[in-house]
Length: 350
Image (cartoon, rainbow, N blue to C red):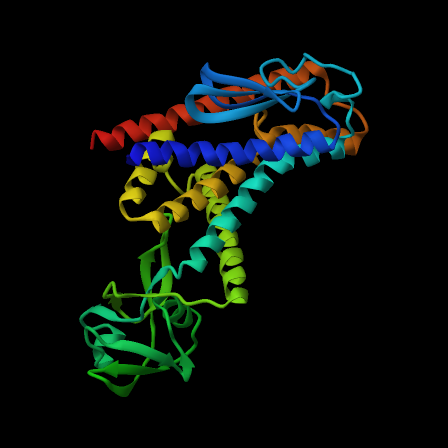
């Protein structure tokens, strides 16, 4: 069941990505020949809106084939009125951006649905207190609830962590212990720790861990919109930063995951309930949007790069250059896919 849900989620996200391209192309007057979900042998095909719609055997991707555009052979062009090739660079960029754009819109929508369902969030309840840490010296104990810092009300563990990280000097913590309110004064200590990318960083901390207690996040309509926006921006920034760190070598290549990891993690999320599936689907959607914006020929970002060149220099890149760059792009793309698959297999084998 989990694998079925994972494939359904992945196919749905790919569908909306390609739907963005499709709708933008039709809006710009471009004839869309094929709209395909999946690759390989076609299992089901029908004709609608003058486009051939297909569902193929390998549901791990998809594509929209427009008249005059062929990623496998960029030299194939058409200069009919309804061809992609006859559109201006700005029109082409609009069509290309629409796919990733739909991914970000879908992620926002998913986060919005999650917010409406009052997602569980970590409460500021202390689990363990590290010996000789600022919290230990100040007398904080397990199961204490941090209710305020310097008079500012604290509702979540993340709020507390952010307040401590950005603090200057000593802090006055309001602590609820056994139903009574107490105040503890301490000074955070700059501590070496690991960030989400596994890098060693220094951060102001007080030496406590979470007890794992959660509470539902109750949000107004405006808070719900703000939550969806902030989560979409956070996920996008995180993935952009992760890609940058992979390129610069700050994050090792062994951390790169492939389609097996996506399917497995989505399948695992299924066991935790619908909200976990929506969270992961939103993250995959943002991931697909970000990766497609990379300036690699054969991806949307690569085509955008060629169109920006044409827009700036008032001429297209030569056919020979485009063919060579496209070949290099496919090599990079298949190389990354192969590396992700290799890492996935290694993880499965322990």
